[in-house]
Length: 461
Image (cartoon, rainbow, N blue to C red; front, side):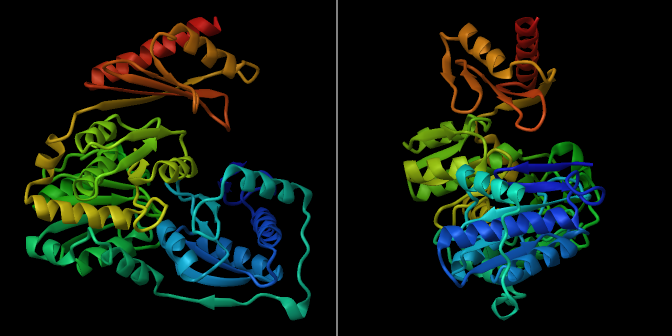
């Protein structure tokens, strides 16, 4: 059982002891710290916070605790109930709120939950704000309101529908063109709120929907991270239904993966590549992804005469670099699409609508579209270290050994070789180095990873 406090929020497993797990007391303490920070940061007397949750079994309990803690601080709450991460992000500015909280542990198993925190723009807090909230939580410097100054809770039950309408308003989304293509799509929403949002969006766009695990009851039928080894059921069903393709989302609907008409993975990394190819063909410009994302986005951006930049890992870092570079689209290689015309957050509804329009316009099979892109293969590994080891020293030694190559130290050490790359990052929560490699064959990517592991072991020895 685990409780992890970080600048991006607090997450942990339900039950157990206070301070060691995500218990009701930990939830109240952290919600109070966020509310206290928000009051101090805004300088306003009247505040409003939007709160929504995914379909986890613990979600209702955690949400009630969070909302009532905020009202105890004199903050009004807009309760979205069952929602998605991007829906809450969209709702914050639309409701002219001062912040937002999403109750979700993303792709973690059902025993986990988390509080993810947003600013008044509906964007994740930066590191400075997150660190300040952790300090407030540790000091328990809360000042709750007196009885006449308590906040109130208002309920809005249709925000996913409102979010869908916002997506359909986007210039590069053409629901009529998609409807004319008469597409059939299978959806696996891992029994969370994607089961509400994605089928509703598809039906609005005239798509025939086959639902798989779309009941939002929080009982995940398989590991909720949308990786190939977890998606055998939808791969089989796409072929059985003779569907045009399959859509997979994680529990909070900010990660998006596709299955082609043959029941094969389109590749999480290539979700962003395909959407970027479409967007850049209509609105040329720059792109951004993180250092651990596929080189394919860089290649597609160059094809459209744009500029590509890589940020440190983490959505807040991607968003900052996107703003700095005026990127027209960006995101993360885990299937996270960030399209600024909508908002600065990973959004599977936006990614789905863009891809459907692209598919209808191309009038080609999904597998054929995938074959148009450069083929890269990734390997993701880690090496366990002893707690007393100087991880930064190890990474410095690796950097020195490869000083003749193109190197980035924005986030760990990334070495760009002519035909492949390796990215080494130390974990913030455990004594390990994460090792990401990419090459033009799976064997080459795996071999590069093993070579780097041996090199690190030599340095340690």
